[in-house]
Image (cartoon, rainbow, N blue to C red; front, side, top):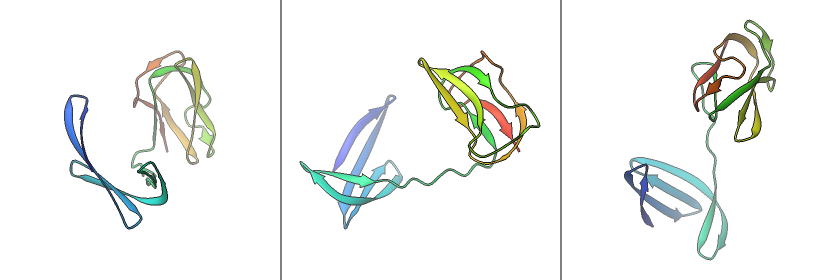
Length: 127
């Protein structure tokens, strides 16, 4: 199946194929493959996705969405543990706690409480 879609003013062709228990999705030159769980309803197949976790060369915490920093739970040079709260970000009337994926030390904090941040902006640099 081929689909022509428009994303942010750019035309893209998406190709979707299901064959031998796998679903392949091709967007431009990039191709993604998923294992099908075999569930079909009204001609629609459902695929199980397995997206690999990103490996970061720089240890930084970025804002997942635009918002306002409401609380900073750590200080520079402080050691932190995996799943520890680092900062709290308020966006769309919701409080989002950003936690660490690993343990380490806070190298520097680039934001202050009540500061507005953009999506993808670096909040904290880790060691």
